[in-house]
Image: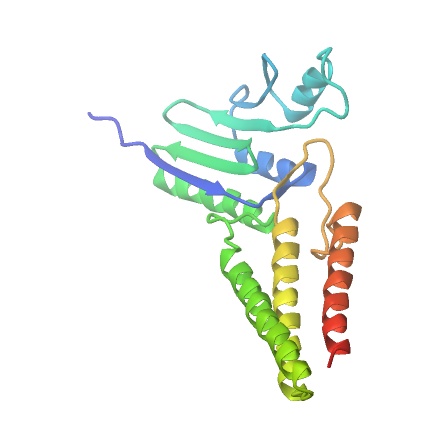
Length: 238
């Protein structure tokens, strides 16, 4: 009698914010009703390839390496359940991307595991398609360069002739402000949607602004003041 076919599914998640809490949730699904010795955690540090039966053991083995300190970042991790052709689950964290592979001879189990793991990763801001910020950035640049050039020409043209069309210039300043706002919004979204991967601690949650580093906040505030100062300088000429 022919062996039943193996059903396999794979999914890739971007922008995930993974910390110890999320890893523990994933491990609960991976190890659900798993036979002893079939679940493992693996990582590579330098030339060392480590594999342990639990995440805590892997963390301890990694920390015991002479060239690893508490500040050595985790850049890869694999959680795996291997029962041969009967059941397999693999979750790989590498380069800011999470890759999930599930296969078994039971299609219900395969799809069920993928669904449970996918829910956890989606709660952690994971997306199967990476965000593209190009469209809003292009709109913001157009709203800045186009009205900005027209405003400068307008001020020069009518100032030279002693006439000022305030309504036109105020409208152009509004377009400039809209462009700056769009660029700031996309920058904030891009910075806050960067993947985060921590193994020994939880990630920070909250608003996009609250998750920015102090350097990013200072840069954003400085850029905002610079934009306002530029608009104020143009308005002063009206």
